[in-house]
Length: 193
Image (cartoon, rainbow, N blue to C red; front, side):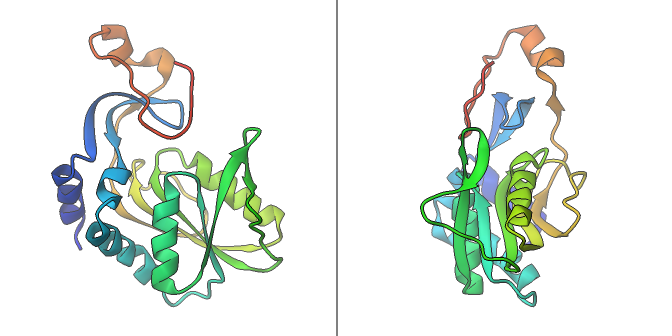
């Protein structure tokens, strides 16, 4: 599947939004990728995650992990296609943690999967969590890389769609300065405007 085909799926499912958005990173943007709108369709989920699973199919992987909440569907499907265990990390007291009885054993080989990466903050936190458990990062797979490859996790990584999307610091956002378009937070983490 080509990048143009994936971008077309985002447009067809109304998952590429235009407006004024507060991103998980705390930055502002005029575009937002709502992967959940694409991933609600099993055929799109399977086809897009097949690219990530195919990239890592020859790697030795014990477990796939994702940051909650956006990456869960992606990680679960990649793990299913690779026939590997899947777990997710979630925030507890502001820090990525393993909960719900999930554990990582020392020396496990872990693949991290995420839906959208802008600064990579959540993925870096999951990588740190894996390393704190004395395990190995095999790689990172993501659906959308909003940095167009600028975010480097220092491991084998793949994105199914890489675009450079303009982002602004909240204090230097022309959309805020214009005041014409209301700031919206469509993601899963809460931030103050």
